[in-house]
Image 1: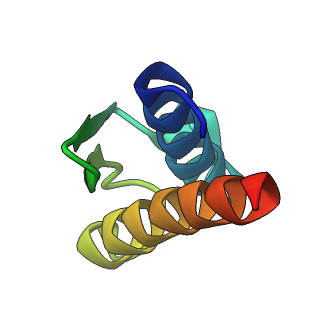
Image 2: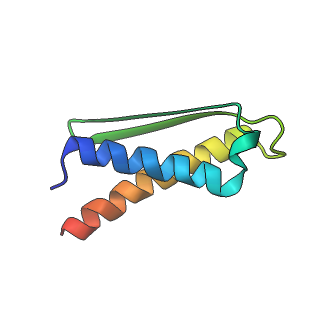
Length: 80
């Protein structure tokens, strides 16, 4: 079983990586990826401020959080 630190890092890197795969880094004014993993419960929250990117920031943030959770699902599946 992966450590809590590995779980958090995996989710955060996947979420941030997804954002920057969709928009240029120079278009992002602020991004905050908050990940917690406590008692087997994973929470991934993404805040994005990219008004010049031409995307729906809330939708992109939600998608990034989903990608972060999916990366952790894949991590646990690989452990089985």
